[in-house]
Image (tube, rainbow, N blue to C red):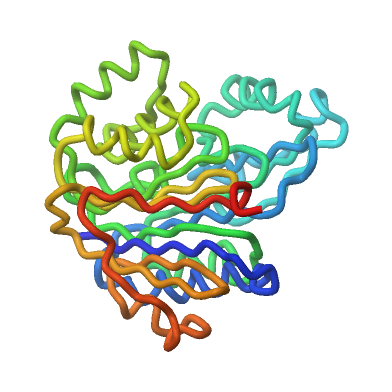
Length: 301
């Protein structure tokens, strides 16, 4: 049992409040998963710059001198330290070189996510503590997703927490359990995908990344997942401009959605949505089994 939340904003005036609204939604879901928690926030693209969110269990050691080290690759690089995480901003053309240098010089640093606009923060602990540790309430953005975990098939670790990100500006949160993840993992490795954990949810994220690399949009990739993924699942997925939801054909994991002129919201339970502005006038529904729900800021423009 885990708790999932998601928020896709239509109204730009709400963007400064995205982090605060997502934080409140996730904290309400604490009893569905007290082991670890995480949030992905999609902010405004930085125009030719790349963001790389990294994590260390020894930040005082691994982040010491990090900005100076990276400036040998990009004089304009910045490093924003946030507790056990840091957000590195660099020229997009240098992003791969930055990751290679981190792997060589800071091998204990783990990449949580990267892209033009995504930042991912996740740690072991209660949602309220994770939210406070990283200043989530002060963050703005266009959309975001969050997860609070009750571990069932793997250890309680930072890397095992959600969201999982396996592609640029892509991430996934999952409530459920996949039965064919080992076979899928082997197939995806043969196709060039890399994995950091043994978590089945990371396989789902990598599957979607691989499908989108073939030219599919998020909605099409989620449709393919209904044929190729076995097990119980509710997925909420983010891309640079998109937000998608899908449940397996049995749909035994709880889910509720709400839509107004200002936003589209997802929660594992309705109580996660009750404090959203205008919720009393929202269209509220339970997403249908084996049905893809998909929104995209670029397609709406």
